[in-house]
Image (cartoon, rainbow, N blue to C red; front, side, top):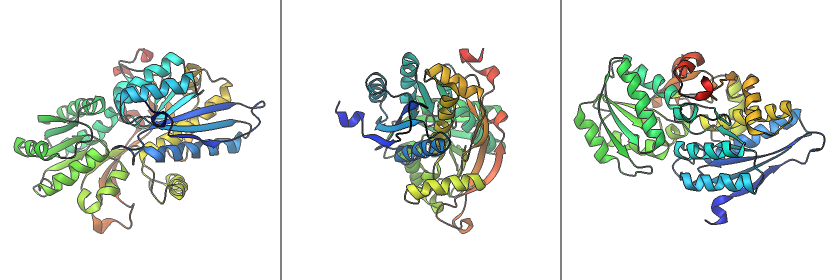
Length: 398
C-alpha cells in the first residue's frame, strides 16, 4: 500500500502551546475522501474536527493538539492498516468519523487492542453499541435503530404499510434493513421483498423494477451517500414517486438532498440528528463551518465530528491521562454540551443520546434558498429515539 493511501493529510492543524503545563493529543480523522460518502463526511469532517480543536484551545491554550487525516476507501483492510500505523508509529490517540460501518467495526477492535479512543461520528450500524460494543468506542451521531424507528415507524403509521428494501450489501445496509423491518412490522406493516446492491452501484434500474413489481407503497433505501442519490434520481425517472410510491430515505444527509435538488427530492421523509437551521446555536455553528467549506452547510456527520472531538478534549483535560478506556469513561461521566447538539449524555454502552428529528424535504415553492430544504414533522426525544439499554446486547450494559 502506498504511503499516500495511509496519510493523505498530515499536520493539518498544529498548536504549539505550553505542553509541559498542559497536555498534547493527536487526532486522526479516518474518513471517505474520494468515494460515495465524501460529501457527507470527507473533508468536512476534517474541518469540523479542526473547529473543535480551536474552540477547545480557547479555554485550554496550554494544550498541543494535532489533527491528521486519511482515506479509508470504504475498505476494512485499508482502514485497519491505517489505524494500526497511526497507533503503532504515528502516536495517534483518537480516531474520528469512519463513515462506513464495515470499516468502523474493524477499526473498533484495533482501538480496543491498543487502548485508544474511537469517536464513531460517521458509521450507522447499531451493532457498534450492541453486540460489537467496546469500552473504547463512543457512537455519537445516529444509528440504524434510531433512524429506522423515526422513518420506518412514522411512514408505516401514516399508511405506508407495504415495504420493499433496496439495501447496501454490507454491515450498515443489513443492519438498517433489519432494524427498519422490525419497526414496520411492529406498526402493522409488511415487508414484501428486498434486494442487495453493492456499494457504489451506478444503475439501480433492475432493483427499482423489482420494487415496482412487488406492489409496495414504500421503497426503503437502506443505503447512503452517492448510492442514495442515484436511487432517488432513478426512482423519479421510472415514475415511482409520481405513481404514489413513497421513498423512505433511511440514511439521508442534507448534502444528498442538496445534490438532488428539491424538485427531485421533494416529499422524501428522513430522520436526522442535526439540521443547520434548527435553532440559533445550530445556525451559528453552521455559519462558521460554511465559511471554511465554500458555503456548504454541515451534514450531521460533520456536526458529530465536531461535537465528539470537543467532548473528547474536555475529558482529556479533566482526566489528565490519554489512556483510552479511562478517557471514554470520563466522557461518559461528563455531560455533553456544544453548539451543534446542545446538552446530552453518553450511556455506559457508548451510545451518545440526543433528540432525533423527522423531516420532509420541502417543495421548491416552499424553499427560500439553496440550503432551505427541510420542514420538521416531529421531534423524537432522546430517551425514545435510541434502543433501550435493557434491550442491548452490549456486555457493558449489564
